[in-house]
Image 1 (cartoon, rainbow, N blue to C red):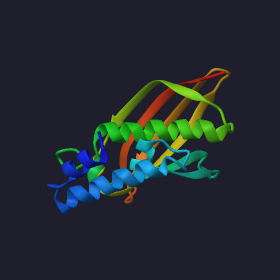
Image 2 (image 1 turned 90 degrees about the vertical axis):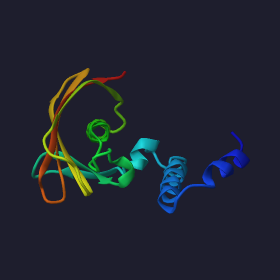
Image 3 (image 1 turned 180 degrees about the vertical axis):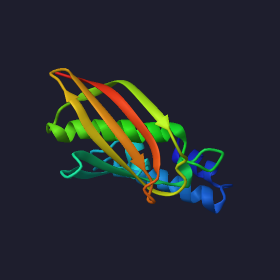
Image 4 (image 1 turned 60 degrees about the horizontal axis):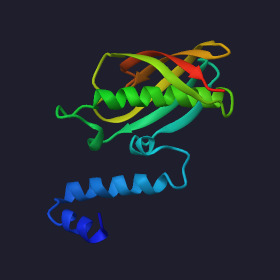
Length: 157
């Protein structure tokens, strides 16, 4: 695809579609300088830090129209991606630089994510030499429980 072809594709977009394309381009450009992947940029993914009192790692994401499904609620796959990303980030920050991959992910969808920021609180249940077990709770800005999850990660050598 050339820039000229892309310009032609953009000609008949409405203002909302133009804003969406602009957000996608900005997310793509941020990946050039950010350690986050494109999908993390789309979610406005943030690592807040470790909450010593609760014993959890805290992450956030912003629900935007682009991440909603046809029912105008956060797409379940995006919720699962947020959880998986928060868990992976937890492992990375728990032992700086640790690399791990998801072996399984079980998500319980409890309420729709509708707008605003979601918060994921991830607890490390077991940290073995090669296997790490995590649990996450996701809440919205009103502290309503949106989803819970458990996952097993495999630590890469």
